[in-house]
Image (cartoon, rainbow, N blue to C red; front, side, top):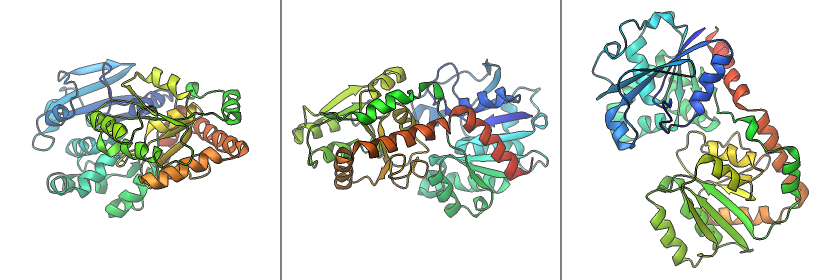
Length: 380
């Protein structure tokens, strides 16, 4: 099968986009399919997001052809004119889009052409387009057309599946869940999980890693420290961003200077090393598509706390393979106290449930399941 993937989330030349979509493409390639990518790069959005602008040309990485298409606007031109003259949409057996820009580009490219199955993947940004007033006016009609045209809709998490069904009638009967997997090679061996389960560390080390912006709610974790019954806790914050100064001021205000360590930006391999040393990972961000950070923390035998009714909730099941919590400092403090007081056999049960979940949802399994679900829903 020849697959066309349309998304601005596909990285080229280490451009900084997440590797998750590329991991899907690589797995499909391993399964014997030909995968090409169109990367619709809308310049205003690129500047706002401070991303690198690449030339409008064709790239080839890992045997995958990537058409980088720079556009001033996503809607008011014939997208075919931006592609090489020998490009033919009829050569593809399946078109998959990710992100609103990918869906709208796909609709301009394939429209109502019969015989080409089309799958629209829903991210958190799709919900923003459908609900925020400015986006609703400018882009929501085009996005709804994409959902209507789609033969299937892949939601990147359980929560997104539920929310898109509430927002769009076209999603109700043709939506499936397509979560990311993890590289099974980074999952620590069972012996390490056993070791972490048997330890009773003091200080108890909490880790979080995120871009330091408001919706990540790092301030809630800091405020929760002040409410703990057992204050022998250290918080390590990995990441940087425009909220860092405000967070540092909050730490000073609460007299938590010895309990909060700002690590700054760290490469992913260093993040993984530091996660080996922590006991719990907390990220109560809102508006998340999925959250690979949770999987990476779980791979290092951290008890994971995710946001209730957001992101990875539904895959992380409260009290079974981690915990979920509302972005509320009092509720979070109560949860941290609960985990710190848990018997070691209960800690072991949760840690190994997390490990089982990771190994049952690695990159290979997630990539194959994605195509299997498309075939099931689309009748391929």
